[in-house]
Image 1 (cartoon, one colour):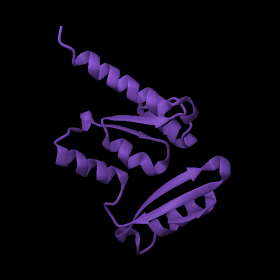
Image 2 (cartoon, one colour; image 1 turned 45 degrees about the horizontal axis):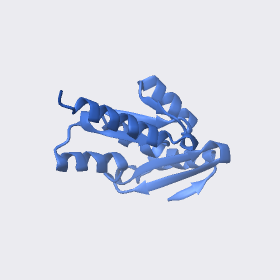
Image 3 (cartoon, one colour; image 1 turned 45 degrees about the vertical axis):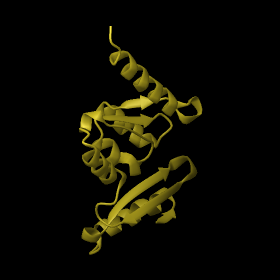
Length: 134
């Protein structure tokens, strides 16, 4: 992992993507624009939240449509794309929130309003109601 300003880490990511190392690495960026702080994770190929989610789903026999993923930053993008139901936190990276809206993904209330809990309550309430026998 390397960290620095948003601009520095975007340049670092571009440089690494254009380098001879590119085929041997996978990069995931986390940005906190308000603090001008960015983290760039440099990992072996196939090491990501998305890859882990797909492997877990395969092991458990879950379809993409049975998966809900909640994220707030660019390092969550592949995971969100791997889920049938993607949710981005309203207080997430602003450009990711814009991207989520363009893709039609759900936007959860921000963390300080218990956004994750609201999403989970909604899902669990729907599951309980749809699973009831009349």
